[in-house]
Image 1 (cartoon, helix red, strand yellow):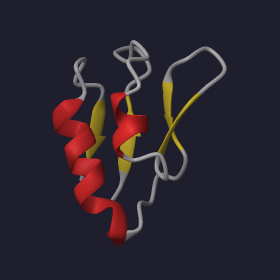
Image 2 (cartoon, one colour):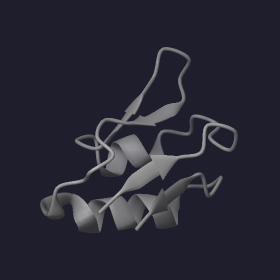
Image 3 (cartoon, one colour):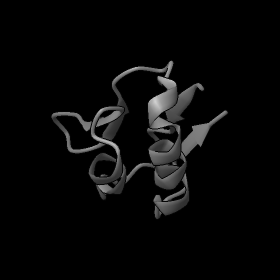
Amino acid sequence: MKVSVDADRCRGHGVCTGLCPDVFTLNDDGYAEVRTADVPEEFDEAVHAAVQACPEHAIEAD
């Protein structure tokens, strides 16, 4: 699976990092970034949860 965070939409709520800290991190400015664009299969469920839970709808995964 590929995942990305739209930097223009992210407001730094940190929901994604709470749900899947192995894939998402907050940068020095407090906004979400992806640690790895190619997500290992073991994190698929957590990434999909983060996509659904993001208040700004800033995360895309396919």
